[in-house]
Amino acid sequence: MLGSLVMVGCRYSGPPDDPVARNVSRFNYVGTENLRDACGPGDANLIHFVYNCIYDEQIRSYDARELSGTRGAAFVVFAGGDGDLTQGIPITNLLKPWRGERLNSVISPQSLGDLRAALKADRFNGFKPIGLRLSSREFYWVAAGCLDGRSHANAWMYPSQHFKSLKFHRILLENDMTEVAFNKAVPVD
Image (cartoon, rainbow, N blue to C red; front, side, top):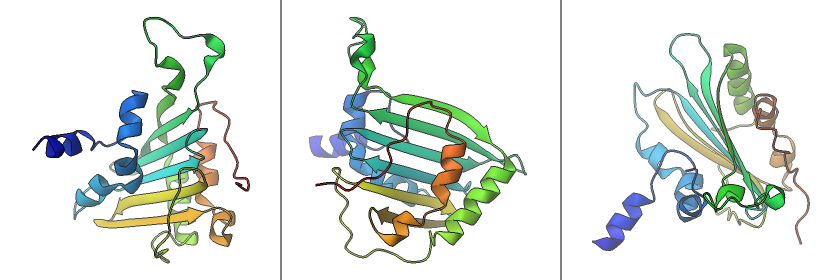
């Protein structure tokens, strides 16, 4: 029973501000089981992206939830890394250097349309990598979403050709106002 309670406590809809909770629930967040399980006819369109840039160095996530009508999408960006100790560690908030930065905004209908078009070009709901193992020590994108009542998920690992030709990340970065430098993919030893 305790194991069940622990597992329930690990499910959430986005990365928590607490870095300890974020690390404990990382696999549920990247795997997006809760998003898949909650997707059905009539649900709002939601696309969730995770960019792993060697987990200990940087992790980024983007959530775009389509707003009703033609108002665009609620857009949540999270960028976290290995901690910024240059500002010191406040005694009242010992985990502050590792909290990362979260920004809530709204993207325009045009940006949302561009994002959906880019996902189509990137074959988001096309090819499915079978047996792909994603290591926290590598670079990859994971995208999952509930679009038009259907659940979709895909992953692109660096240095594959699919990864190198991705288009959706440009739209995400155009709307990312966190001011946290984006770690570009590089070969990993």
